[in-house]
Image (cartoon, rainbow, N blue to C red; front, side, top):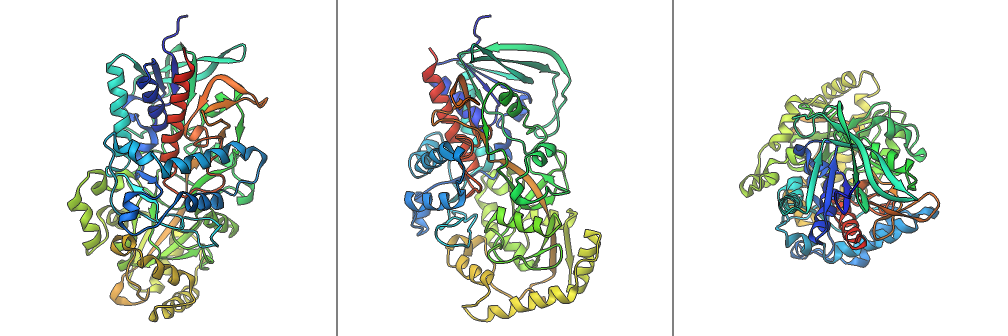
Amino acid sequence: MAEESDVIVVGGGLAGLVAATEIADAGKRVTVVDQEGEQSLGGQAFWSLGGLFLVNSPEQRRLGIKDSYDLALQDWMGSAGFDRDEDLWPRRWAEAYVAFAAGEKRAWLRAMGHRIFPLVGWAERGGYDAMGHGNSVPRFHVTWGTGPGIVEPFERRARQARDGGRLTFKFRHRVDALIATNGTIEGVSGAILEPDKAERGVSSSRKAIGDFTLRAQAVIVASGGIGGNDALVRQNWPAWLGRPPASMISGVPEHVDGRMIGITEAAGARLINRDRMWHYVEGIRNWAPIWPRHGIRILPGPSSMWFDANGRRLPSPLFPGSDTLGQLQYIMSTGHDYSWFVLTQSIIKKEFALSGSEQNPDLTGKSWMMTARRATNKGAPAPVAAFMARGADFIIREKLADLVEAMNALAGNGLLRTEELKAQIEARDREIENPYAKDTQVLNIHNARRYIGDRLIRTARLHRILDPAHGPLIAVKLNILTRKTLGGFETDLDSRVFGQDGKIMPGLYAAGEAAGFGGGGMHGYRSLEGTFLGGCLFSGRNAGRAAAKAVS
């Protein structure tokens, strides 16, 4: 059979779109194959907040933030904790990615019309020493337009390439096998699925109505991770985190099922660091779910008090926004798979944001007027207020005793004691009378308010939790929320995949989450945030350019 294109890209998410557009721009023919319909083009990136890790950006400099490649690499390596023989290529990818984030990344995107919200966020702040986990400075740059705003330039380029005859979309085509001849990957085969007009994110039909075979000189696997497949998450759960949670909610649609990872591994590709993954601990059940077990992540400011299921405050430095996997490890060590925020109305109106494009209509809709209200609102932002009114995990009461009673009722047990929570809250409240304190969380709040971005829209003024003037009291039951695969196929810096014999598999490339965002796990154990979309951009670009150069 004659080749239909020079390169096949499996997956129409962000990494796949980036790779495909780079191939088309190089004058090569490319086919993008995806099991979902055209309405899902852009994949998970569409649902994201659009956060990007940038180093020494103009936005940082305007806010007085002093950043550098050396500082960012120090933070990255301290967070990654590379400690395995197979971390050779992940480490090289990490070094290359930080250089990209400190170099041409912003200008490359800007040339395509991408823009950034001017206030830079401070995610994953750590709290250990200078060589430990966390961002030393704010680096989380939110795309103006959130997830759709990062997808749009590449979707536009892809449609232009399609109209020019260099790119073909094959939607509702599910790849079931890679085709190899004498060890060289030269195509894909699979099933054609029946048309389905299910809205983006909604589970679609898996009924096959035909089959297909496509051939090319190269195949790029950009099919995403395993976050929507509860069984695979449990199967690959890291031993150092203890047993898998009894209950998890999902931060990604059901089609993020990991099928293509298994198919590619069966074809001989080397999958490494499969037990490295990234799941959030501030998940709440979506009151208007789109996909099964649909959860949303709270993006908390620094002031909420955090208690485990037994009513003990999480130890320092495991405060909101500090160390996601450290928090997960601690929570799982308690023998329960949930925890609690306790806060006030004053805190929630200033500090609570929700992750995702659909939960941030001001940023997604590019409305400066709506966005400005984040700093002036008298109440919680509308999406947060909707969860307060309708969300199953929110409790609002005037008195602490009534709050604790409702918390126990929601959890279905009697683990919490009013006297114990009251003692811990009052101890914290005594620490706020001075501009200095020994309570590490209070110190963190003082530190946050010294940064103008946090002071304006992310950190409430210090006040006593039990002060009625700042009430009512609010409790939020926090669930484990599945999200990202940090391990993946081992690749060199051209995104070429290594086989299980340690040699490059001719014709096979991987990008995005399927490649652990590059090399088989460039994040190591932990992420600094804003690095997942960026990893899709960087690995997709490398894969597309390398594949285009390699094909005749």
